[in-house]
Structures are given as structure tokens and as C-alpha cells.
Image (cartoon, rainbow, N blue to C red; front, side, top):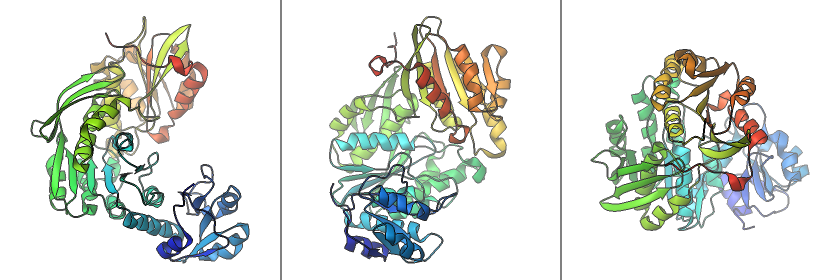
Length: 483
């Protein structure tokens, strides 16, 4: 394990004092369940629990040290080394983690990319991680660590020798991105798209665009702003970019004036082929994930690669090996009735745009004999007063995609279920758990089943049950090729 931080580094960055023995600090953590030996454990205050309650356990598990408030230091130092930080602000430990993250950003010569957007930011971040890892030491956000604790934690974990840093930045209220992008100080900032997500906290989609546009406020002087040219709010985002310290603006999409433009996109059940022009240079590549939405986001990836001055040809080749993240399109073969069905796991989160994209992807999956395309959908949350209409409005996408059956979970998704013709109604329940048995009773060989919903709708439980009951040997996983 290589040292990430020294005693002097920690004390200088946080204003704290290390009490106890020196141990090698090789990482950082806020969760004892995933803590690795040598991690610096930050005892931040969560919504339900105070991290100080877990310090003894963290040190027992091999933490290099625990960051605690000065008020707790005397009691907790008996369990092992602690970094006592000044008692200031609502959460002194979170403040210390933020300062350490800022110190990590200040000491590195890495080229740093920040990604936000209503849809596709995690997938785009993961694609950049995948592509850049083959071209230099790359550090990127874990999972969806994109909020007020996830961003500084990711920064605090960044090695000084990093060549490329990729950070995901999220928000669900105005002004949340400003302090996060100020910490990241990106050389390149990318907005995937703007959609009515978290709309209950905003007056309009234009207001969401303004919130997303905040990412450009943190750009380093002369940095690059990258914007989806196809989004209806392009001009508004462009205004934010031009008001920032960006040296140039690059656009991507299918729009004829996009700087990184898709000329053709060929969709297959388990991959896409993109024929694009990147800043005037023709590039054709395979993308190891399905769906038009991921193909369009790959144009943003190529825009970043060009802006970094990285190898465009190598990036294009590596995209063929890109696999969808868990909960965002992962596919699993299921053994049912002596045959094979296919599960598409889109359960991580949901909003109207991403559900429509997932439905379109499901429509392109080839089913087996007597197989059907089945959408299993949970409530989309944080949509405000328009929520019933936005759920009901998905019926048009279901009809256009010729989805055979819909299983709906939750009071909001019931609006969609009741808007569908009886022939497409598979089943409805108040919770995801209650939907499991009606769904499994109806599954048969040849089916293609897509599961999607907001995190709060707990649709991941359905995926877990289907995998546990029916998943076949990994060697048999995959999708039938399109004719």
C-alpha cells in the first residue's frame, strides 16, 4: 500500500492534530462496512447516525486513523490514532474532509474532468474512467459519489500522481453545484443533458438548466465547457459557459452544427456502432452498451478525450469493452421453464427521460419463441405536482415501443398502469416487494424483462430476487444477436 497522506499533510490541510501512533494512510472512507485497512475514517454526521459512534469499530478494522471533532478526541483516542479537528461549523469532520479534498486538488498536476446532467452522468463518468485508464493513471468517483460528502471524499482519495481525474457532480436544489465545482476546479466540464428531474424543487426546466450550468463557474481559466447540442436548453447552457472562465465551448450530439457529431448510430441488442465526426475528424467505433442514449453520451466522452489531448483512436477502440454499470443496463440471462429469458437491470434510478430511453432499449431486444417484452416500472420520485401526468404520459412510449406487458409498482406508477389498454396490463402493486410474485408467475422462456424505478421505489429488490431464482451460469449470459 502506498502512502496517500502523511501526518504533516493531514495536520496542515485540516488544521487538526494527530493523536497517537503513525499508521500508513492509503485511502479514505466514511463507512465502516466498506472500510479497507489503512483508510482514513471520517466520522461525519449522517442523516440518522453520527460517525463518531463508529470510530472504535473503524480503528478495530484497521483504519489508519479516524478524523474526529476536538470534543470527541479525548474519549476516542483510547481506541487508536485520531486526527482531532477544530470544533467549528455544523460538522467539523465534513469541513476537514473538504479541506483535505481541496489540498489533494492543489497538489496534483492531473487534468480534471467534471460531469453533470439530468440523465447519464454516472454512465458517462464510468465511460471516461474506462477509456482513460488505458492512457494514464486515472482516478474517478466511486458509484454515484456526487454530493456534498461524495465529492470531497473522492478528492481526498486522489493520489498526487494521478494523470486524469473524473468527478461526477449532482444536485437536486439550486446552488448545490457551485461549492462542489469550486472544490473540483475542473479543466473540462461536461453537461450530458437537461430534463425535468428533481422538478419539484425548481420552477421550470430552464431553472434546472441554470443549476446545471453552475458547473462552469468552477472551470479553471481557459478550460473547456462541453454541452449537449441536442438539448432544448442548449442556448441557456451556452450562456453560462460564456460567462465562465472557459477558453472554449465544444458541443456534441446529432445536431448538424455540433462539434462532435453523430452521422449514424446503428443500434443492436447488446451494443451500438457510432459513425461520428470529432472536431472534423471521422471516427467510427463500437460501444459495448446498448441504447441510443448511451450512444449519444459517448459523443460527449469523445469530446472530452479530444479536449484532453488524449489518444482518440485508442479511446474509440476501448469503448467496445465498456460494460454497463450495475443498475444501469446490466444484462443477465435467466433460466425459466427449461429455456432462457433476459433481465435488463435499470433499477438504479428513474426519471421520465431515462425511463423512455430504457423502454426504447427494451424494444430493440430480440425475444425468443413466444417471448414478450416486459417493463417492470416503479415510481419516479421528486417530480412535483406534475408527477401523475408524467407517469401517465409514459403510456405513449409503451405503445410506440410495442411493449407487451407492464408491471407497475407504487401509487404514482398506477397512473401509467390505468392509462394502458387492458392487453398490456401485467400487474400492479403498492410496493416492489408485492410485485415480485405476480411477476414471477407470469415469466416464461424467451421473455425480455426490464426493471426500472427511482431508488426510493426499491426496484432493485426485484432484480435481486430474479437473479437469485433464475440466473444461469455467467458463461451463458448475454443477449441474442439481432437478425
